[in-house]
Image (cartoon, rainbow, N blue to C red; front, side, top):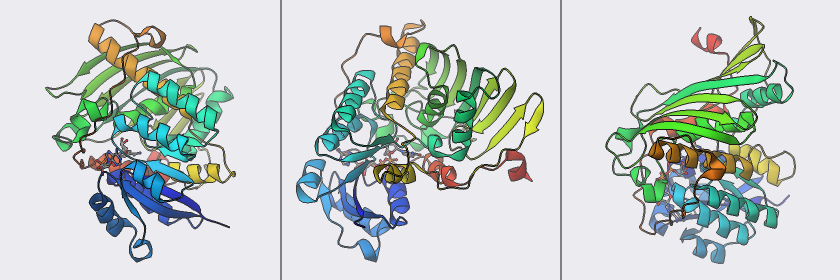
Amino acid sequence: MAKLRVGIIGCGGMGGAHAQRLVGMKEVKIAALCDLTEDIAGAFRARHLGEAGKNTPLYAGSANLYAGTKLDAVIIATPHTTHFELGMEALDQGMHVLMEKPMVTSAPHAYTLAAKVKETGKVFTIGYNTPCTPAFGYLREKIRSNAFGKLELVTGYLSQWWMKGTIGAWRQDPALSGGGQAYDSGAHLLNSVVWSVESRPAEVFAFVDNHGTRVDINSVISIRFANGVMASLCISGNCPASAGPLSFLFENGRVDIDGWGGSYLDVVVKGEPENPELPKIDGTPDRNFVDTVLGRAEAKTSPLNGIFHTELMDAIYAAAASGQPAKPGAIPVKAPAKAAKAPAKAAKAPAKAAKAPAKAAKAPVKRAAKKA
Ligand SMILES: NC(=O)c1ccc[n+]([C@@H]2O[C@H](COP(=O)([O-])OP(=O)(O)OC[C@H]3O[C@@H](n4cnc5c(N)ncnc54)[C@H](O)[C@@H]3O)[C@@H](O)[C@H]2O)c1
């Protein structure tokens, strides 16, 4: 069988995590690397592809990539505000796309990209960690089937020593990041909620503290979803004890789960602990993307997740700015920030953000067992 020819756009920290996953897949060939300069892509090739990949072509800029090498798919792992243009271009070039999170950084961009995905019929998934994990597969099935009664409330937080680790990097430049910690590692927690509740955020209130930077560092967020579920979440970028726990509270039970990486799950039903047997699988977005392109799996993420997530983000920033609750449909449509052309300073990925995907790949374990 011919191998799936995948190009990586964005040869930084997360591009490296994707490369490491792809080199282990026999049905995939990393067929090209692309960054702002060939030098960046070349150093990445030496780090991640070794002797076997020493002839992999390198490209400065995505236009040169598509002109130079025939591909089936691309993984886009670049700063957030570049995602929209790179995603539209990739779809126009006939690519299947695995887009790093967040999908885009404004709702209008999300709508346009989703329409392009529909028009082209290509596979388009997003690099959120948790939807591909068995723990979140279990949770979603229980919510859909009302197994524990109606889902009422969701609460949780994400904390990470993000602010200090991203000083001077694109992550604190709104023109490239589109926002701060809520759009960066916070995207995993927020998407975990939005993906599981499967409903549009109808009303949102938020307090946001930038801690003297140009982007959000700490946020407190309240959400009422269209289906009546309510959520209360904290995102922190200056508290170093990294964690991302979520609790889903049902009429008849509770699920405590790792909302960052899907690595653990505790279930209580009618006051009694349950011990669900979960499959031990490769629960990475890369595995799901490749399997979906090859027609042997269903995509675990879709542009609709990106729409709900960006609507939520727009509402968080609108509510924090106005001091009033925001309704996604009622927010004035702002002109989406133009992707900056200046080369982004390659940021050191915050330690935990880079590690999170690896965590997601592990089979979920009970927290009690992990502690023992
Ligand atoms: N899924 C996860 O757990 C996870 C973890 C970390 C980062 N991410 C995401 O991955 C993406 C990249 O983050 P990172 O930590 O790898 O950043 P990074 O700074 O380490 O790497 C980004 C790379 O993109 C390159 N780049 C910038 N603009 C480009 C363009 N127009 N064309 C080609 N290359 C371009 C930069 O030169 C740099 O090499 C972001 O969306 C981030 O949120 C996801």
